[in-house]
Image 1 (cartoon, helix red, strand yellow):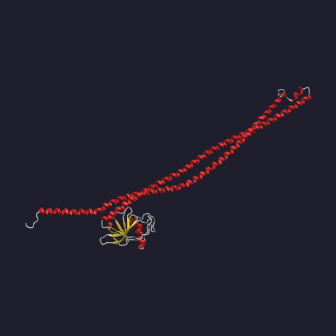
Image 2 (image 1 turned 120 degrees about the horizontal axis):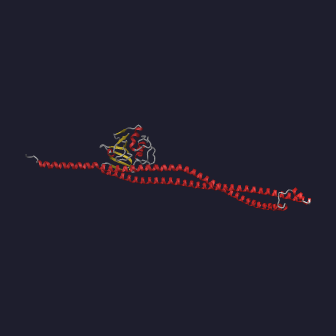
Length: 399
């Protein structure tokens, strides 16, 4: 039939139509999935960053613990220092006692030597007196004066001899008593000397124990200081290393975000904010950390808009938790954008493990928004136009 298109032609046209539509679908699919490729990369980087941050937290906690231990040990060390000083004082005192006892022993040695000589001399005198007695009595010390009187022819000589014997006997008795006294003094001195030597030995042993104690105390003190400081330094070194790695990962994350900007309709605009803080991660006036997204958003509401917004949950003020903070302060949380509202993205996705907040500067007719923010570009202010909020995960608006 005239005007009828041959079936083969229709088939060819149908083929090319399908091919064309397939190509268009493929291009569209590629265009739609490109952010997802970047997103996966950012997500992986964020996981790495979160893992590093967890390690930092752990190592910082260990370093803080070691610092606390060092503080506690400082008290122990101060006590040890006092003990060491006390022990050293005892050592010095014992040294003085040892010197004194050594002097007393030396004095006793001299006295004993004199007494021994005196005893020897008195023994010699006694021996002489005994010899004289023996000679006078012809060897019999038991003959009485009466016997000599009866056997003597000369009474006068007998009386004289008896008197002499009595004198000799008295001398002997005196000498014996004197020798016994000297012997007793010698024994006393010898006993005193032995006691002093025993005291000296005890003092020397005591001093050796004190010296060992002082050495042990000093060693323990040094080990406590060394151990704690070394461990603390080790943990802090780990923290510094991890922070360096996080900085590197953060740079990669921000680079990936720039790829997202260049790959879609979203645009990064110039300009400034008036945000006053220059220090990084120090507490601001509202309970957040400076140069982070949360600090900028809090500053904007409090200073620019005059709407009070603070961290009602210290330690839980991350961007993803801002809807809870908003509820604490009587603000509404909605899915509908509004100029001046705070947009809060949940954790993960293309933001970070802490989420992200920004200020809605403009609501566009195509469903996108313009936002101002901090730390989307590392620790810096940025203004992004034509942002599709859903591209970065779940979100909500606060106003």
